[in-house]
Amino acid sequence: MFIVLMCVYIHTTSTYVNIPQHMQIIDKYWQFDMIVAMMKIVPLRKDLNKKLIQHGLDKKFNKQISFLLTNHKHPSLHLEKLEPKHLNIYSFRIDKKWRAIVI
View 1 (cartoon, rainbow, N blue to C red):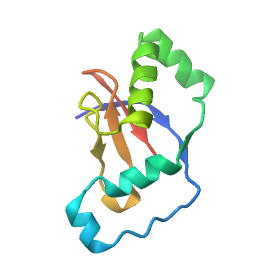
View 2 (cartoon, rainbow, N blue to C red):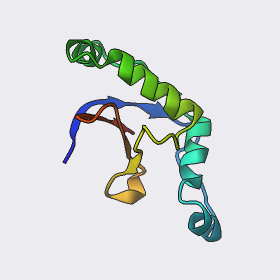
View 3 (cartoon, rainbow, N blue to C red):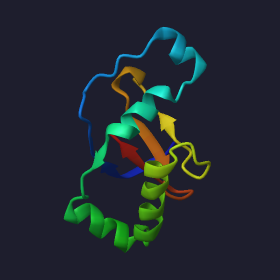
């Protein structure tokens, strides 16, 4: 079980990425590689940013966002694809208690 604190809204230049079947088998992160290459992070709403500060998570969150943008396979992210998998919704760990959702 994990607690969702906030959402990281991501806009992509393309809503659908066509991935050959053999590439899906070779690298399960290939699709996410393409999404990361095209994404833009929209600033958090003021209320969500306030929650980050209240819980002392603002520095941790910014650190994890930088990992997400530079190396989404970084071990401290613990990146997971959530169900249903066809929606391409991911979550990453902010710390041991809090996770964020990438939409």
